[in-house]
Length: 237
Image (cartoon, rainbow, N blue to C red; front, side, top):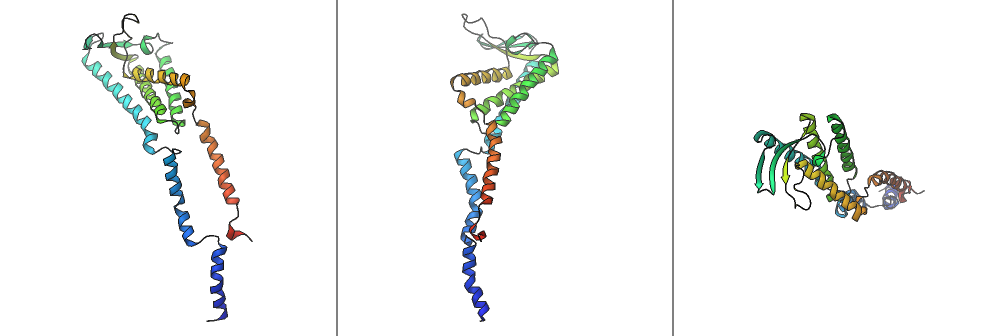
């Protein structure tokens, strides 16, 4: 063996040490992104896919349920017909609501209501899209509201009125009977009521992380830049 070959063999460990990591350490580094991703799921920093899509699935379910029940009413009941369901406490009563929810008088004409409903629907869709890291319960409430808003707007575009049919009795000291409503009204009114109560009782739950998503990207970029700018042991001269 020549002196040059011996010198190369002697220098090989020094070259490996100068690189700063061993082959085993390189192999461990290759698995670090997977471990970090799994830990992010476990501590809740990243929502699992089914939790991201569940509010949208609920919106579709509410829309199908709303339109399906209205189709049954239109095909089996005459206008103002009443069918007892639980005595006189709950009845099916087919009415055509040309106004707003729960018999509120209309604001403007038919297309004004369509436009207002469409604008509100887009607002809730935008909020639901932005608050991906908020509690699942809050996003499910918004999903139900979105599905109900789409269902009622479909009625106004198709017929010029909303099909209502759920007729509920109330104690006489409150009012004789509640306004006739539908499935979409139920999800909209109950969802908004819960949001208002949460806003009053626990407002911290309704502080969306819309800004946190935009702020997280520059911070991540700064961290990546700082990591790249740090000299590696093997690059030191």
